[in-house]
Image 1 (cartoon, rainbow, N blue to C red):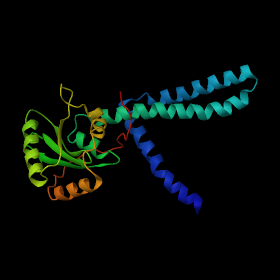
Image 2 (image 1 turned 90 degrees about the horizontal axis):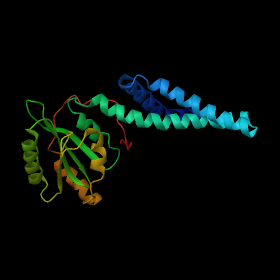
Image 3 (image 1 turned 90 degrees about the vertical axis):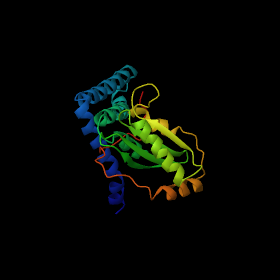
Image 4 (image 1 turned 45 degrees about the horizontal axis):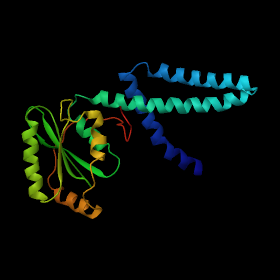
Length: 221
């Protein structure tokens, strides 16, 4: 029974890695060869050191697990970059990234959308309300309209506006999670919960948000 429970606990993590590998392979087809190369090189170096020290078998037993750890670390970094690349440019990519934040934030996607598919998402956390816009020039006005709406339902709550993009003053998609997580905490846990309740009635729209394993706390340079 204990083994079955342990297997059930581990399976979601294994599935997550498999999904991440599939997405990474579509963006970076060479990932499999790179990971195998890392395992062979690191294990080979360990065996070479073991031969020099007179303990090649022991070195192999140590080197192989170490090579897997190195390969996993490198894969995690590459998978994070590939996950962003796989959704960049898609409708609702920013919402997908925001909704993947593990703790402290809840995101309502597409609280405002126009016919050009420019949109605004609303996130609520201890940093207050974050309004994130995706799209063209109309997004700035949409953010202002949503700010007024948020101020009406939650007067006094701190509000931060973000536009996703690569232009000056915008936040690149791959840095969006980090940018939101670094916002200063201005609300207590109780205030945050009260704020969420106030804004619960102001829902969003049902849109095809890009799916797939998004990076959670992965550092992307």
